Image (tube, each protein chain N blue to C red):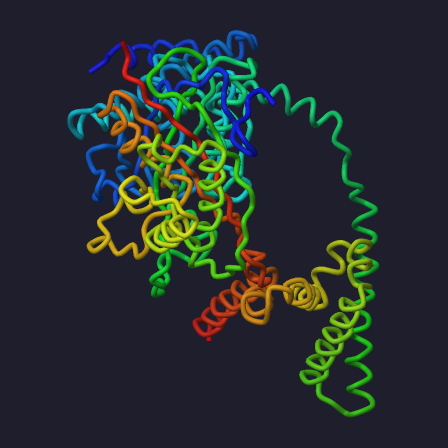
Length: 217
Length: 338
């Protein structure tokens, strides 16, 4: 076995303790050394005579990778600082206000439907709210089809995504987009691309809540 | 024109020398016909990584580093790194290029990427734009299946025309100097599309392109007797038969010298691979593990390597489009030293 490669790794480990004090040229020199040693280690692993020797070199390769990653991260840090200087900040306050307006309007619409159903048709609250959901889903589907809802989404952000209209939008837009790949591999396979996680984890969450209800009587 | 013969053939002034090469292959491949010939065998399909995609990248890097080590070179000495794979946006190769740190051209020629890289690499060296180039391609069965077809654990019956994507990678170091294996000529391929739209029958889709490239070379050089081997990339059993018949129809009897890399890897009966191997890694491992060493059995040997690629996209296949095929030809000559 070639023990010098292990020594190299150990010696470098000591230098890496003071990684912050090294300048970029030094770090790049270290990376080059690591790259060359990686190549030697791979060749040693390929030529191993038994499993134990192979494991030994695999272990050293892992250490080599780990050291490379650490130096690379240190080099990247400087670059990250530059990025944060020029990246524009998202206008949080404006976004929150718009989301409130759009989301609030959608919910207000829902409430109006509920009230209308309860007062005019004497519906109970449960069926009125189901009817409200259906109404909003249908309106959203139509608005998605004629290309209006994406404009609302651009303006409202989370406000248009969180209510049930966002769910309807995600299903209809996927269906529209993937119909070109056919009814089965297109619409059939892709319709829930975005809504899928909501359906799956919504179901899982309802099971968990149901169990809690059951246990607490 | 200076470096050309006939209509399509490139004749290099200074042939690029294949200075060294290395192959890495998966476990299924290691149980096949070339079991002892690979330089590195993966201990597991996942190769100690958390995903098949990472495993493919690691395998490719191993192949590259082993080839460099054999040539006594470092990655920092490479003037160019050319390569490709089957993952979306050829991401495995780009990560290998990141590790190598050499100027990089990412190629997508599907399974013809190796031949494509050899042609372009030899052009770069012959043009005087550098001294050393590496060409590296790979494919990983599970990563490719999951991306192009079905989840790997899904119980589907594969059709008889289907091929098995090879888990393997090959790296070739091209050098401007003296050496035994030389790339002396090349025939860049055209897209040939015969209207095949079944993505489980890629051999048939690519065979027409292979025929086109081989006949182009034969017409330009009129030298069927001067070539000892004609080797296609991954046509598989069906494509191989089509190619042979079509060549015979055109008056070229290639019997006895025509081989396909896809048929050299697995034991057909025992390993359940149907029509044979395929993928960027297929020709990459077979050329390095079988044909290049085999050429050295003769004092002078000429081999026409025809890398074949089915340039399909799963998306356009679902939209009902056909599969464009391509085949790049590279003439490799072996001359015994002395």
